[in-house]
Amino acid sequence: MPDKYSKKKKNEPSKYMKVALRKERERKQKEMAKKQASIKEKSTYARQKNKNTVSLGYLIYIFAIIGGAVVLTIILTDDGQNGNTTTTTTTGPPETYGFDHSVTTIDSEEIHFKDYEGQKVVVFEFMTIDCPACDPMVDNLVTVYNDLGSSELEIFTLDVGGSSINELNQYRTDHSITHKISHEGLSLSSYFSLAYTPTTFILDKNGDQYGDGLVGLQSVEDLKSAIQAAMAVS
Image 1 (cartoon, one colour):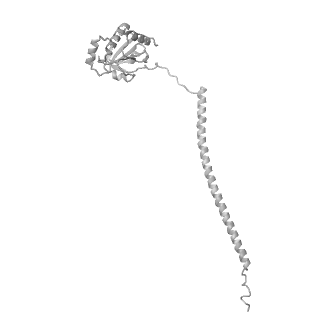
Image 2: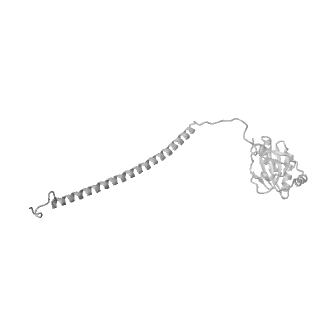
């Protein structure tokens, strides 16, 4: 009977074989780990590359839009400079009268200033009945109106002090006023740079303000000179 201690079991690997097998397994495990690490690294790189590609594509898209807009602007500008634009020419009445407003006088007459277009110079005197300088000012305007006549001139004394129609009627009588008076001066004052009374503004026959406002008392000669200069405006 064979001694169990003296002979190895059939097919049992030797001690050296076991060591070799163990080393082979460790080698394969290291190779497997290395491959897995490489696969993971490649996957991460691929994801990052794809992300960068998407970002780059988006930037290219944005720049394409901006570039297209710039090119279109250049083309349109160039066309405009070369006369490749469409213009519409209309024919009709001349430009609108510069001061297209209206006012009602103390005689209930509604005045539309546009009706004076091309015909008369219009003078606005903004005043109050208790203003010390307004009394001699309106007297000088009465003189100017009588001297120059009404064929090319219309003067309006415009109260901004809230006086009643009866008070303004009495004022007209006291100063022998023959030109127009209105109690609605405040409604027109917002169209001018009015800070003091009396202040006088002159409109030429186109309804445009001629010169600056005349602040304070003005002499008959100065008023005539300014009004006649406005009459000369075509």
